[in-house]
Image (cartoon, one colour):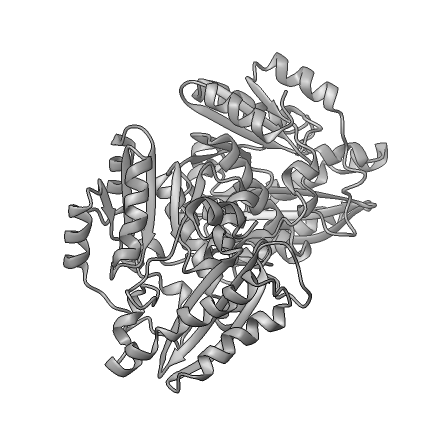
Length: 291
Length: 291
């Protein structure tokens, strides 16, 4: 475990062979461990970073109450055979006079970007820093934050970062709820209702499998399922082009990203699925999401 | 000579030992060769890039008429013992759908940044790309573009690029005119008058050496000399803090960057000097300029 930049650079320089990076905000769960296991399988060494990045939270968001459990996180990572864990404080990553920002201007416009102004600027900036600090051969991101994947893939391509991105499918609870550090915010009643999110995606995927291509019909299929759960307040449901993430208004045979954000009380949950559904594999996601 | 990204990555991977990078826009002169020679002295291999970066030119600027002479440039670089010259076209560096920009928000505000909106965003973005493509240990920049140095130093520090920046003193013609690719635009009369720029800096440096610390007096010393040359139209004269480049309004014992932009007809020339004048060395510039 390392918390200074000098120590990280020294430890990185001592790693031999291919290096995999898994950037996280801690509060680790099986979704993160799937990223670590993928990295472990591909690489000679695995670096995990744990940093709750303040610049990707807006003033009204949950930065101060975001779940933190570093001792548990470190136990999990030790058991998973991680070589190096970087746990910087905010002043290490953002010293006084910090003033350089990355902006991915198009794929960050809609969906989460439209609802969380500045979020993806913070994400792109911290990820660029982590890439430069850890110099991985492959960096692993989860499908659940699909727009984040698209933003980072675009950033890597546009700025020629010398690394590959791998996208790992969403890990789910037994009722289909996508694993998320924010699930701990849910009351038992909300948690019981939250399985509706995956059922909404499944309903749209079934319509697609039956030949439905009209984007409005796919969105409506999700809304119909969500309407049956009184605790679910949909923020948005989307059927967007998987490559550029622009909302579709006409049928297409290109891959589609279904995504939705649903509030349960003050907790906002995300989920998504690629269509055709056969694309929701590491290979499919890595190739198609964000173009 | 290489013009594709794949070929560059392969050639870079084959270089052994420490690599120095000299990014240029071509139309090479003794100023560029001083950068190459510095890189040659420090490194096992030297990469020079020649790319007239369209995104750092505003619509009303001289992109289309910027001087180009690739065969001559390549002769000079061959003679200087450069290992690899990267000469991409704009569509290689900015493919369709390019959408990622770097913004260094504070040191890029004043001076050239105030007069050339978007210029330093274009500079920071292309330099980040070249860093990722060439992965140098040290990158070399000239003092003449002092604010560019400050922007890039800040970007490297903020984003943790794994490299060092070296700043090489301005090379000058016999009358003191700073070498610049844009000097070829000058008519013989303008060229004869352009020596006034260095004399203006010298006058302010002499006042400083006599104990003058009032920033307005240093600026006035430059203006007084420029006023004697009828072809010179000063755009600005500045006495700014060398670390953060904010214009000074009170005396300081911290290092000062004197800088000025002067038009001769439609040609705009830049020059600058650090005070105390003993700082105008590679070591002094590299340490002090941009903090």
